[in-house]
Image 1 (cartoon, rainbow, N blue to C red):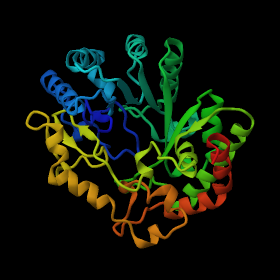
Image 2 (tube, helix red, strand yellow; image 1 turned 180 degrees about the vertical axis):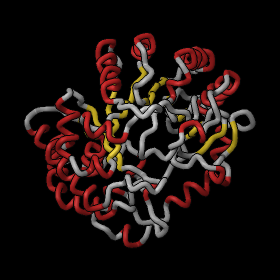
Image 3 (cartoon, rainbow, N blue to C red; image 1 turned 90 degrees about the vertical axis):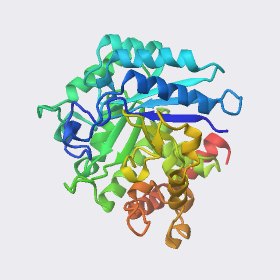
Length: 363
């Protein structure tokens, strides 16, 4: 039995920001409110019921996302840890993570995250100018300085964190400024994800520009590694793993979707945070066990449909690395909308990815 991963949305789609490119744009219009104490306890009970169903102590990963999950308040996260202590009767190793915009974290919450070893993912889109073009608060004000204040607070109290940078159309045009802004500020763990523009606002990068962005960032990353600067870029790290014949830790490169449990604040469960829609609702923790949800027709269909890759993809020289990429980025024919970006990137970087796999893994 694999580890148990549960992605929890304690504040649903509620957010104190109004990022121009966000597909939740409109704030709490897509929200079920804050998760109740009753739903939280049922959720934690279901989690450890499922994790221990074979009698072995597998790891449990509890990740909190939104909207903005910290809107649920420190008390919510204190209850989570308390309930884990109540229901983790088999002694599972528990890992906590929270993805946050960083705007409403005070010292007390930061110290709690440090004490309980929460890994924080903090959204920051490069340097001040680029970040503040798109990432505004609910009053339309810039947020860069406030996010940086939180990151320095994390440094001060010992919260481990990484940076999540959304590559929008404008971000993609400035790869050097973005990479240098982040690494120059001392950040060593980076993740870049292409903007998924579901609102038709023109915020997604075009494939050519995104491909060039990846190439330039890779060049600068490789140069840093060669100079002894240990910078982690999540996708690049995983490509090196793939070149070494190892499984990627990131789901978007596996070629098939799994069903981790994404739990909305009302207790409804979905197979992925990109598919929180009525079509993919697997059940509710108040009514069903995770095991029953995982064996449901909805879950089986979700996994099965993710394996339908076009023959063009299966025959592509890049397929062994990208696996057709994230399903949410595939068009109606099953082809990744950034396919040409990745082809350009691998043509540019393949020899160095292979060299790094030999350096770090001996193959």
